[in-house]
Image 1 (tube, rainbow, N blue to C red):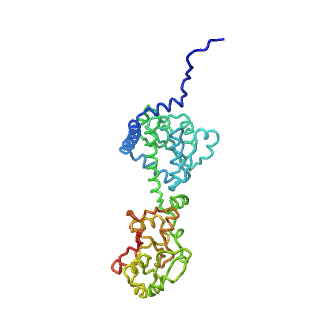
Image 2: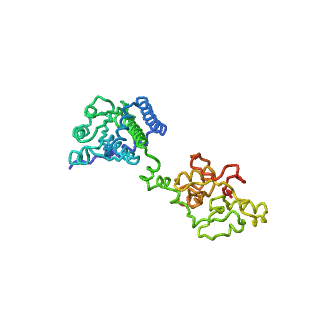
Image 3: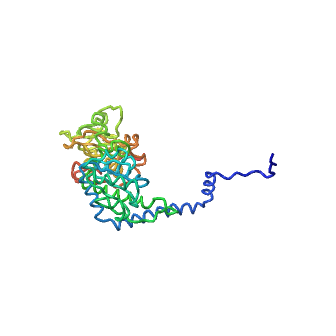
Length: 385
């Protein structure tokens, strides 16, 4: 039997423990410096690539726009993940695209590529064995092969019929090894090419909306017709009736904070809000309740037309600091109302929206009549109180 040692045994720290020790020992200031240095290095690399951007990228975008089939992107490792992200960007901006993994391709997935497809291969070095090998087959099978690589002098570039060089960049990795600046530049240039291809295709916001029906972005691109309170749930009255009659004209399950006023042709002529009523009562002008509402309404209210997007409507509500936005048809007749309380409940806007002033596309603002015909300021907003 071996004698027991009088000193306790100390086991070597596990790699996980050592890593935690190293992390905790690093001063916060040094941690912040690494974060900033990495971001600066990557942004500097993008600026450098911008200076070198040439007609090669333009031609790549033109080929994408002219492609009659699908755009097939391939790559391995970090470059492969960049390719997959750009597949999503292209697909959502009018260019049908899918990703082809080099290893899977040579085991049957080459069948995904047709004769009218355009292949784009990503490799910083241009020497990735899997990518070079599969592109040897793809150059004969597809309509064209574009290489996105550091230089024009490498095996992948030799196979391609068009090369988009991204330049050589020092990696931001502290060891100078992990792909960081190179993949950042690859992604930025890929996005730029995709955006130009989208413009060349004539891809518009309406087309974008078709491909993004879900999520917050899809909601923003939805038509106001889909989110407004329809005509049947709105308070409407003729602009010749009294204020008292207009307010009591209809009882609704969901109370709206405004009455839309129409003329004898059924066109929107003005709007009268709850805050307008409160102001009359605060001034002790109860006698005005029996006057024609046309004398107290806001003429030429800000509106949106049927078919405009919810994003445009939200921008108008924010910039104008109003709470109700009539929706009109091509004949200027009201067909519904955008009420800010509905948008807040749906999460489309924050409750503090009315306290901030944002810029909006002036083309989204619709006015029914010239400014000179307004009898009252066009600010049909509710009092903060």
